[in-house]
Amino acid sequence: MNFQDLPVQARALLKDLAFRTPMARWVAHRWQYNFSPSQLGFLCSCLDRTRDVPGPVFEVGCFAGVTTVFLNKHMSAEGMEKPYYAFDTFGGFVEADVAFESDRRGKQRSQLQGFTDNRKEWFDATMALNGVTRTRSVQADVNTFDFGSLDAPSFCLLDVDLYRPVRSVLEALYDRLPSGAIVVVDDCKDAVAFDGALQAYREFIGLHGLPERIVHGKLGVIEKP
Ligand SMILES: C[S@@+](CC[C@H](N)C(=O)[O-])C[C@H]1O[C@@H](n2cnc3c(N)ncnc32)[C@H](O)[C@@H]1O
Image (cartoon, rainbow, N blue to C red; front, side):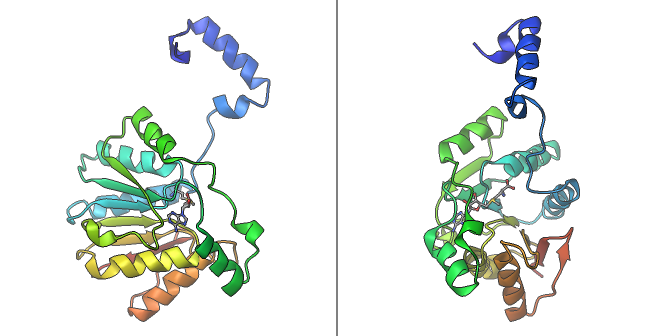
């Protein structure tokens, strides 16, 4: 039996009990996004601007699918029908990426933990529970994934935090991007654990003669002319 199938009084009693315990965090609404409202709004505006650009949507680094659900709900509400590919190891960072941060960028390994409590099956179940049907999850190390096997994206949220995977994905995608495509690189912020994303973004736009545009505090934008 589902919680929702219980009589209303029983649901209220169980919730009331839960709110008096540490389980409150599971029953109360909580902000679970890695993005602020204005950052989420900006991502939606990128989807809007690229709606007529050919190609699917990519979210490279999707973790548990919180932003995936949000962006898919926006696409449905606006009648945007494109495939949405969500990439992740579904097990956190890969050793070569962490070793690069630690050996070449002076980061403490202890700063680079997280995202390990995840599974592709949980991500897929989250999509199903939220009625999201257009998303295809891809379990891969994005440093080595063959992006050439898919159409190039019209919009890509690149959210893998560390230098090496951000750089690899920009290199793999940029030349094939259709005109008008937008890539947003998350964590373009200085002097934080994940500032490898900023270094990769800056090096990449420097090499390609592209303008630097970082909005809403941490979103590095690349637009294909
Ligand atoms: C900040 S989380 C993504 C958050 C997600 N976009 C959201 O808004 O909820 C970063 C994710 O990148 C993934 N990741 C990091 N390096 C990766 C790599 N080399 N290949 C695939 N996924 C990677 C991690 O497993 C983690 O789930």
